[in-house]
Length: 336
Image (tube, rainbow, N blue to C red; front, side):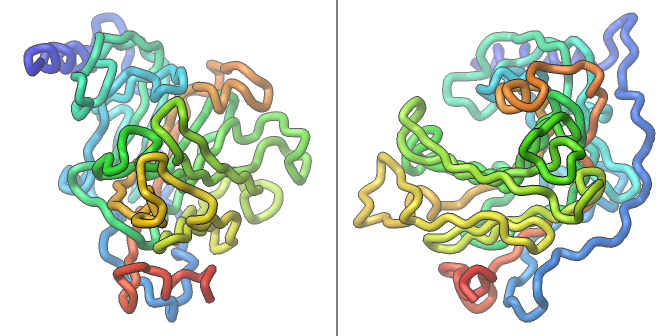
């Protein structure tokens, strides 16, 4: 198994400079972002416990792991996530996750999969995905990131969380917290305000039984700021406490769920009333290329002209409730 994983990694690594192929997205460097607060009240009681402001020259590997996999996330996505400077890079105080067209082959699954890394898979696009798995995880808190999202049919940026341990069983019995997802920004959208196309982000929970007996709840909301909002930076956050999770965009609460709305099929509800969202979760950021959620909406299908594309992250910050670390509820704005 170790030999197979090593060979798969070498196949992926060897694609960094394939003969006759021009690497790199060709995207210009982004300008320095204007200042943006975390939109939380100073008296809220949240205490900063972890952050990355992306001020260095290279990604801080003590905080982030770069995922390498080509399986498409279970959503028929078109990318291999690769650990290349062309797809994961820091510039002007921002993390850039860049997706662009380049055919590569690599391991099907991430290194931690119990069944091994699977087959060698070929995809036509590469992109970036970072996560705190094995480095940092938390139970309850405020999780926020300031980002500028890409546009175009087939773009699918995400800021989300998975359990550090599958305490209640495989996905989605142990839960998934989607802080922000957005697809196809700027594309045709009959139900979107301002007649300027798709301008919504979403938050969601995945829970219930093990796949395929899982379920989810999702809510879409227009990005704040009126016309042109999809072209600007926004702060996406959740406040997660025992038995409640609230979603925010620029301090506008867009969604809320309580323990009455979720469950784990593998947990006794009397003994674990907040399961599966009562365990440590880690953070992830990625830019998916295509996939079901993007290709099934707006214009439909996949537009290669949407790429290269990039997800820009100004910072990521994690807070925990100083006066109520056990549940986090005392600091939650939705409980005020």
